Amino acid sequence: MKSPFATVEEALDEIRAGRMVVVCDDEDRENEGDLTMAAQFATPEAINFMAKEGRGLICLALTPERCDELGLDLMAAKNESPYETAFTVSVEARDGITTGISAADRARTIQVAVDPESAPRDLVQPGHVFPLKAKPGGVLERTGQTEAAVDLARLAGLNPAGVICEVMNDDGTMARVDDLERYCARHNLKMITVADLIAYRRKHDKLVERVVETRLPTGFGEFTAVGYRSLVDGKHHVALVKGEVAGRSDVLVRVHSECLTGDVFHSLRCDCGEQLESALSMIEREGSGVLLYLAQEGRGIGLLNKLRAYNLQDQGMDTVDANLELGLPVDLRDYGIGAQILVDLGLSSIRILTNNPKKIRGLEGYGLSVVAQVPIEHAPNPHNEAYLRAKRDRMGHTLHHQGLALDEEMVHEEAVHDRERRAS
Image (cartoon, rainbow, N blue to C red; front, side, top):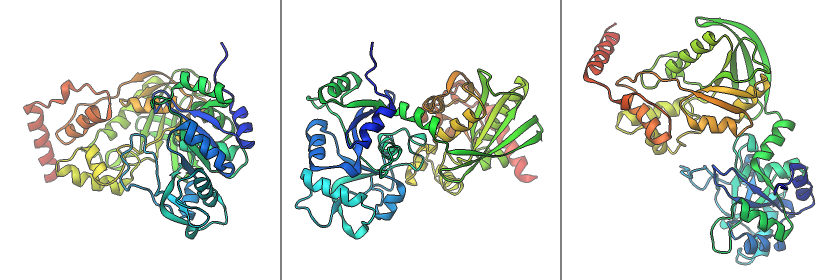
């Protein structure tokens, strides 16, 4: 049976020629298809087709640099969208339009926005065109339609900006793959998936570079420390490698996000330090494996914001609500960079030390095969019980700490230990 999907190369030919393609994301994500084209080719006819035959919201996907050049701030300081779609304030061309909503007016606004000679003064806010701010690393950093549109235009050798519009069925429901297959046949359009674009970029692009490798004896055993630099944001990441892992299957791996308070200061607010130590011990016992230490402090919000969140947690909020109160995402981490590092180390199938199903989906979304989830749990203490409960109940972590119910004896013992630590 012939696949309904074209190759990325075929899609790039279409984009390069000024035609539209349909881009589908993962069925576990939005499970939608977007009409997608290079913004520089957006004509009144193209915008009218999107409005009439796509029926979704017509948006302009831009790079972060272009958003900054045009002075486009995010629409919401606190992004609570499930997939953190980065809408900026809406815009309109200052000159050359009427009310701004017609196909011709929106095409004009798009052309002004992507013209390298345009400045903030050439646009007014709000308007009838909705810019979206893509992640710097494209689909390798976020697996969204916004990033796919920018990546397709860039890979086609064009201005890195795209116009997208969700495809809806006649009855107003969202078109799924079966619907989109018939839709593309009717309109003679090519269709690809974000996953295919990720695979294409992983093959042709590299967003991390290996900088240094050195022997690192530790209290858990001897490892090889491999240092990487992200080409997206310049952050440094380290892989601690035990034994020969390149080319091996089912390698034991821990992808660990940096936690200064837990890993270094042994904070009792979280279980990060315990997980780090357990992972190193388990990899040492295994005789081979990788601990990947990613610079994603505080689930990506940074150290100072994490400390601010601690204050809110002391006032009764859980870890989820504290982040939201600060106007920050619950979990800002993306595993594309981590996946690239693991692939660079020669891994393809892994057993992952984690309690977080999102981490598994994140790595699998970048082409790694996760053959097993290995739990990594520790008994809660009075300081982190609420944190662990929030991770289980609100973030979907798989935790089995006897219902996270601390008995009175344990609470008393921890309180005594806490007083002794303060006294000393």
